[in-house]
Image: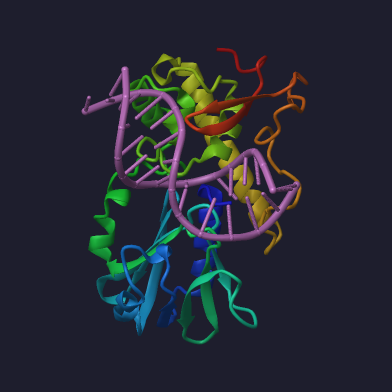
Amino acid sequence: MPELPEVEFAARCLRKWIVGRKLLAVEARPSRVLRPCTPRDFAPLAGRRVREVRRHGKVLLVALDGGWGLFAHLGMTGKFVLEEGGPPPHSRARLRVSGAGAVHFNDPRMFGRLVPGRLADLQALEHIRKLGPDALAGGAEPEVLGPRLAATARPVKVALMDQRLVAGLGNIHVTETLWRARIHPLRPSRSLSRGEVRRLSRAIRDSLEHALAEEEGEEITYVEEGGDNPFLVYARAGEPCPRCRTKLVKLDIGGRTTAFCPRCQRL
DNA sequence: ACCCGTGTTCGCTG
DNA sequence: TCAGCGAACACGGG
């Protein structure tokens, strides 16, 4: 479920699995995940040592020796997994590393991306260049967030989902955040008071860090789909508000479903 | 069988 | 230019 916490989790896994090792080969199957590249474009990465894995918002950048790198976006269903007795069912690429086994980029729905290239070129990709400040690296601070929200009249739900405004939040965490901050999702961004921006700022960090802690909790326990809904209000329309027991309401904003409490989050 | 969806982009309209 | 909307992408789960 890739929003910032899952991408950060992926970054930590990759650091554990491949940083410091040599990338022997990247075996990619042709798929839209590679767009606009082809499996051949991965050839220059072979034999290079992995220097570091960086994350900005939901974007991953794997830096290799010699100025080469790998851009990765998990999309909706992308995941890096260690190979255990054969490839996972929707492997789009296999990264063979020196020393131990291989890592797969698994992605059933293929909304993800895996692009090789010169690091400088990858950083110049429009998608990366236009990203706002990372939500866990200062982007949620009131002094940063406040002016950015003040510059737009869009509903705060829509603005927070915009990766150019602040990078890392998606539908789940915006929903969680607005409930924690007691702000109605349709509030015009520029109408937020200083105090509300402060609450929002705190709420963003709280929901992201809470999700991250749950994933890190048990070493391999990923918050699995199919398990119980671990969120406070996301996908809980119709259930009672955890704070005041008022029935949570479902709302469609910018094409995404939001749950909110009509009592705690007044317009 | 039907509906929904964690993300992003594109085209159309006002 | 901006803002909003719907569709598209491809597949699994409830």
